[in-house]
Figure 1 (cartoon, helix red, strand yellow):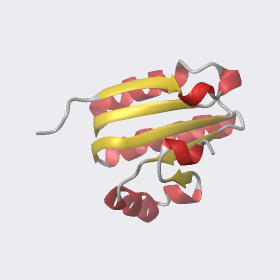
Figure 2 (tube, rainbow, N blue to C red; figure 1 turned 90 degrees about the vertical axis):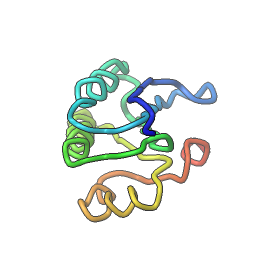
Figure 3 (spheres, one colour; figure 1 turned 30 degrees about the vertical axis):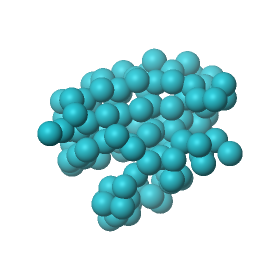
Figure 4 (cartoon, rainbow, N blue to C red; figure 1 turned 180 degrees about the vertical axis):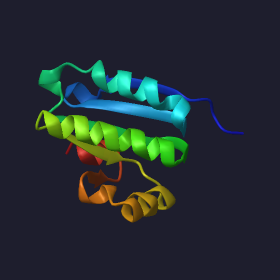
Length: 114
């Protein structure tokens, strides 16, 4: 059974780096919550934002489009989006659609913050 969609923003290990944790499925139904979560981060903290996919069960094309919109929003303010916790399937999908050309990929949040 797939866990219901949940999202929250946190600042890991007292760092200034915001992390968006996504649980469940990233589909069109999650779009508004994902965009709003990113928008809730103060602009001065958006120079580097991590998205943790370690509890993400599914991403469809609408979910990919949402991620692209976040990457675009970040680049408009000279910020970066970085991905953490992608399983091998999601990493392959990100490679195929070309997102790995625009985002840094980390094994997990801890590695990203080193």
